[in-house]
Each structure stands twice: as structure tokens, then as C-alpha cells.
Length: 133
Picture (tube, rainbow, N blue to C red):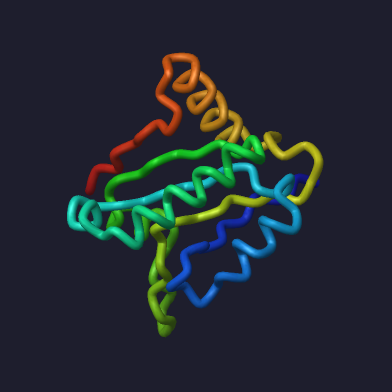
């Protein structure tokens, strides 16, 4: 039975900083890192420093990285915010799958292929713009 991958917010300002600690303990369980921003985030020096550090960690541990623009669309795709819950910080998401066949999911396999093809074209951190519907 295939278990779905999990998304974990991993920003220092997030209450779920445990996801980053878990990734350090078991980097093999992390299959993708999503770094999401909007135009207004480009001037956020602390966020850019965090992105640089997490990218270094991901590169050292062979974790695919994908930059995403369109925070509102990303939140909608993830069903955020949950009714009655505080909105989560979605700037940095770690997709984990603790099983050995991590890329069994067709969607994750396609993202991995896109990331690999981008690196072959010397685009080390590919970008995807999510459009509002």
C-alpha cells in the first residue's frame, strides 16, 4: 500500500521547526524542498538567508529543490488555512516520504524528473509560477 508524502513547514518563524530538525536526523526521508515566495518576499533578508541555508543542506543531501511563486495559489492547493486553525508559514516546505521507494508517487516522480532536467541545463534551483485561477 502506497503511503502519501507529507508536507512539513520548515521556517524558523514556524511553530513546526521540528520538521527541519527531523530532516537533519533523517535526510533520506526528505524527497523535495519547496521554497515559496511572492514579489514582496524578495526584500526579506532573513527569509533569503534561510533559503540559502536550506538550499545548502538540500544540495549536501541530494534533495531536490523547487522554487515556487504564487503563495496564495500554493495555499489553496494545500487547503490552507484549515478551518479554525492558524495559517501556517508556507515559505519553506519539506516533502517527506519515509519509505524506501520514495518516488513511487507519479507526481513526485515528475517533479524529480523536472528538477534533474533543470540541473542538466545548469538551472540548479528551478522555478515554477503558480497562477491564480
